[in-house]
Image (cartoon, rainbow, N blue to C red; front, side):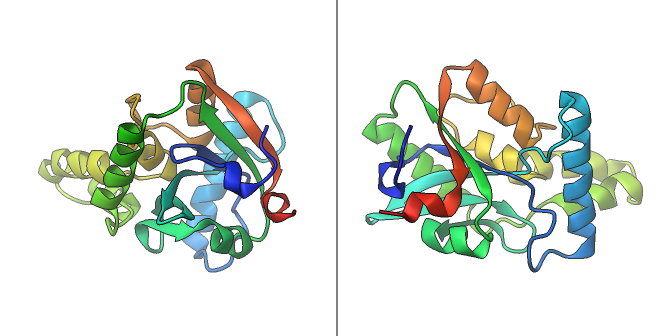
Length: 197
């Protein structure tokens, strides 16, 4: 187990508890988040909120960042200290691969994050294609969804060196998949506890 944010490594995965009430989230996205959470809880039999968001940790110039896709800014990375405060000190779980990433693999993860930075969330495109556009645009949109991801866990899994097939994978399922494939939990608590001395 880790006790301080400085012990986090590039490639570690963050899973955040419910973000249904996050500031700035529009009503549509709150409903989407609630539905994802409800479905996960139904499948797992757990009535508590599930893992509703996932991020990837990367170190850039000795500053720790979390990277993910979000509905407002698309794929982005943000300083971890800022993220912790902005998110309102949620409970988080950090997962780490038991076999450490090599320097080359860490650089590859950072490169993948930067390749995708700025790509918008593909949720609206998916909804438009499946519920209103002509059939010939669905194939095109499926390719776009595979490239950009419709939910955060798709982006997180896409940036892994151990490639995981990610379509339709909710954050809770991705966390389970990591645990089944030689990863372990290294932190499970409120995020701001990582910033205490």
